[in-house]
Each structure stands twice: as structure tokens, then as C-alpha cells.
Image (tube, rainbow over all chains, first blue to last red; front, side, top):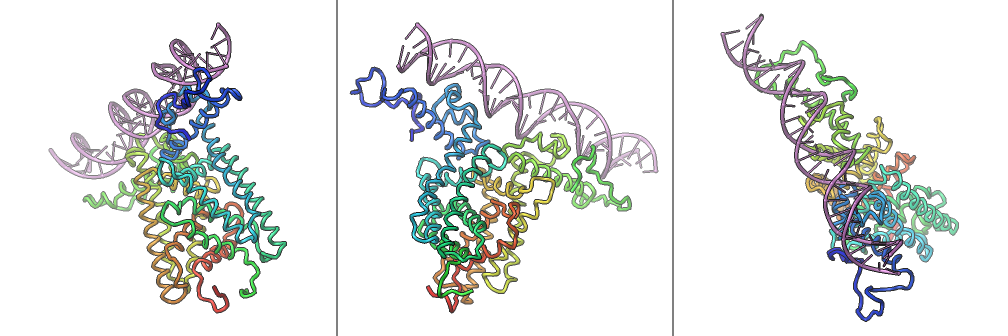
Length: 240
Length: 240
DNA sequence: TAAATGAGAGAGAACGTTCTCTCTTTTTTG
DNA sequence: CAAAAAAGAGAGAACGTTCTCTCTCATTTA
């Protein structure tokens, strides 16, 4: 992550002078150009995220983003064709994080643990992003911002739908497997269970519990309670 | 609600010619003028809500709102001093609805039913607003919009905090009473329970379950599951 | 030296808001 | 009660600002 307070040309982080490359810092390895381009894009995205958190997608101006990135508009528009493109990119990476977490679902022994862990991982991941120089609840802000934008921006909506559909499929698959194993009451409406758990997770992320003083461990029984309540796993003691 | 397509002076709804207006200053409060003013404000707010749902708080322009209200900017600015003021008013009314629902909480016999009903009433109320000419998920849109705005707009944040604090107090009081009555496991963290239930409710509202085909009755067991799971009411069969 | 990169002015549109003016309604006055 | 005066309501052009994005030209890199 590039420091946002750096002066112009900050992206050209001057490495050791010992480099035998003339006048430049790193890597001729694979086209220094391509590397630099990637770094610049990253720089813009980081700056844009900070601005969006501060002022919202519509509220943040391109000038604001340029300042934050230590870049001129002319430079910035070389990397992104429009403000929309930046928003879409951010929405995409923001939603991508879920996929990795879900992939780890199969590691848990039973479905209740799996769900609880997925929920906790999501919240953990979200609150981990909040250690930067920005406001403490930056993840929640960006999350709500993306959701709001997805409701009127066709392409952002498409990005969200794609990833949510993927998530839903994955959860449903895990649930079905657990049902086969007899871990779930066969009467359970799995679609509803998935949707409810997603709603719970999004609600917690939106309110940003960790930033409000609720420790992550405290959330463990919350997710577990909902999971148990929804799936009613077979239990010799519980009837009804 | 006044038709927005009416020609000029449409707001001067000719009431009964029989009412003799008193010529004192009280007329300013209850007279035809005052009633007209109220109707116009209502007209603007309705138009603004439609625009905000369509384009977001920042995305909707004052011209857009003026068109929707069938009004000139000059006229509109006679009723609201700024766009901000309109946003604040909408945020306030939007959050006000919760209060009425919570007031009915004490009618339920036990705490689990009470919570379930509060949750269902919230969702019902939200989805009931969606029968207008707007998009089917307009309530969810406005809800997310208000939440997003509250994260960077001081005064909107204040409005939200006020009403959420009130809600929290009310729920906590009900929980405490139930605890006294022995309906709740004495170990339960009531603050966490309140926060979790609020998160669940907001999550469901945000995803707008009713608009997505999930009937209201289906949500009943969801709220109940979370409530039971969180509060662990004493039950001779369940241990631990 | 040719291509890539960037700075920064600024074009053109759109923004929120204000201004001026007209028309209607209400109140005061003779 | 009619005429005069004041106040209210609205239209729409116009204001200054800010927006996104482009263009020109200088600098750096290979």
C-alpha cells in the first residue's frame, strides 16, 4: 500500500542506489512499464477508496481523488477511463474477498461450525481493513456505499449479483451435503437459511460491530445461535 | 397525496367555500394558507423520495426533484432552504416509523414472541411502502441510502443515532423485564442480543426479502430462531 | 529519438442556489 | 364594501461554483 502523503512521483519509490540499473529503481525483469502501470493503478484505487469512504461515490470528486493520489487528472485518466470504471473496480475487489472465505468452508467438520466460521471470517476480514489512516469504520462505509450504488448502477449491480450468486451456490452446496449427512432437519428451507445468514452477516458488517467495541469472539455464539436455530441439527435432547 | 402532474396553482385545493377564515394570527397556524403549505411540503417530499430512490441523495439534482414535483426551483426553495434540509426531513420520517412498532412490544405475552413480532412488523412496514409507482424495492433503496448518508453527513447521523438510541433503550428495557421474569438466561449479554437482532433486522430490510419472493410468514421462524438462540430461555429439555 | 508518461490549464456541462418579476390572495384602509 | 396595500406563491433565467473529462505541451524512459 502506497503512502498517500507522498509528493509527486511518489510511485517511483527510489530503491537502493546500489542498483546497477541506470537511473531507475527496480526490475527490468518483465517490462518495468507493466509493473509501474500496475503500481499506479493500485495507487489510484487506494486513493479512491479513501475518498469514497470519506465522501461517498457521488460525493467524491475526481480532483479529490487526484489530490489523494498525488496525481494530475491527465495522469489519472491514463489509467482509468472514467470515474465509473474506478467504482466498478472497487466494487469488484470488495466483493471478491468473499470467495476466498467460502472456499475454506469445507474444512470445518460440521455444518454449524462451518457457518459460524464463514460468518466470523467475513467480519474479521472486514474489520482488518480498518487499520489504515482512514476512519475506523471504513469497511462498513464502503460496504454500504457499494450496496447503495448497486441499487441504481447497472454494472455495479451486475458485479454484486455475480458474486452473491456464487456465494449462494457455494453455501447451498454445503448445506445440501450436510443435509445428506443428516446434520440438517430435512424439512429445512435451505434457500431461506442461506438468505437469512447472508442478511445477518451483512447486517453485522453494516453496523460494524468490531469498531463499536463488540469483540469478534462475542459474535461466535450469535452466528451459532442463528445457524442452530435455522438448521435444527438433529439433537437427541431437543424435541419439536 | 397531491397529483404531481397538475398545472400551476394545483396546490390551492379549493376547500369548502363555507369555511370562514378567522383574521387573527391563529389563521396562520390553521388557515387555508397553512394547510396549503403543508400540502406543498408533502408534495416536495414525495417527489424527492422518488428521485432519491431513483438516483440517490447525491445523484438526484434539485432540477430533477423540481420536475418530479411539478414545481419551479423558485417555488421549491420557498419550502425548503436547501437540498440538505430535504434529506434530513426524509431521514427523520424514515427513522420515525420504528418508534410506533416498538411501542407495541409490551403487548406480546413472552419475550420471544415480542421480538419476533417487532422484527416482522418492521419488515412488513417496510414492504408496505413499496406499493407506489416507484420500483418494487424502493424502501430498501431509501433505507440503504439513509444509512450511507448517515456515515458522512453529521446531521443525518444525529437523526439516526437519536432514533436508534431510543430503540435500543426500549428493547433493553423489555429484555431486562423478561430477565427478571426468568424468561432469559441470566448469563445473556443483553446489549449484544439487542445489537444482533437489530443487525438481523436491518440485513433483512436491506436485502428486501418480501420483494424477492420470500413471504412474510417465512421470516417468522427466522426471527424466532435467532431470538431463542440468543436469549436461551429456560427450557427443561435443553441443557447447556 | 520515439514512445510513454505526466502536469495542469481549462472546456463544457451540470450543479445548488438566488434573483427578479408576475400573478394571486389576504389584509388594511377610507 | 370597494379600493389600496401588503404578503404569499411561483416561474424561469441567471449566478457562481464545481463537476468530469480533454487537450496541449513538457519530461522521462528505453
